[in-house]
Length: 274
Image (tube, rainbow, N blue to C red; front, side):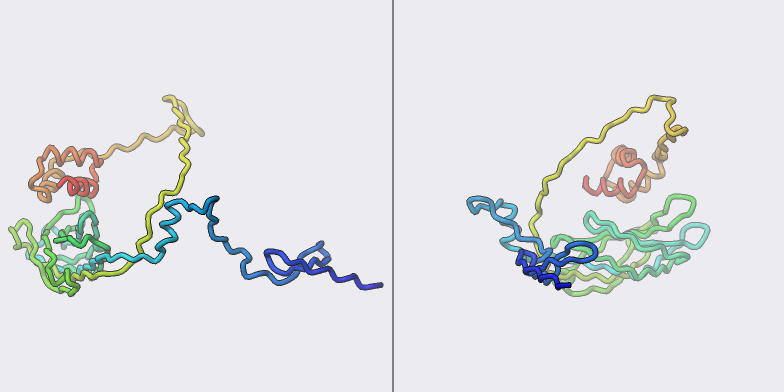
């Protein structure tokens, strides 16, 4: 039987391929080009004019900006008084601008809790201070704020030097009489790429709305009623008043009601109102 004549080699955009007959049919065999499966660069439209957004994307792909990164390590605290019937379970909360960071709870830490946790984020170079709060975690009631203070960022920190020191805490015992907190603070400049922000075209589709008449069951089950948030108490307002002494009680209660009783959300809202 005469051997089948070799098929001619065909050169395509995918490389030099040769058509061969196999048990599964005809297939192309050969070496693929280096450009195979690569996404081609965007083609310029007619006239050579590229949209402004694409021009910004490809004109300066390596543009860099200088930012300031603040790193805070919450090491430990020494409190002058214990509150409650049992040994306290303290945790620390940092407020840096509009950001909030919380350490894990130092279970049975009492008056000498140790955390050793680090928080780091890009901040505004004009940042002047950070706020520190120490809470006692409660199992069956609202966590109690037992100490607080403000840490002013020194010029040495803003110049890139690390500061490791103890700062006073205020509380029920008086201003700067509740104890001390041990922090390590560093602010450094860093270079990061500055890519322009682009708004990609999106198609918004409104989902169909369905109204279920009262008493109608779906799938044999009646929809469960939505739980109502707990009412705002005078104790909640008092705790918030300690943090925002210059804010009226009515304003605090209104913000708490709008936040559904969520104190963290209410605190963020009140901070934006300052």
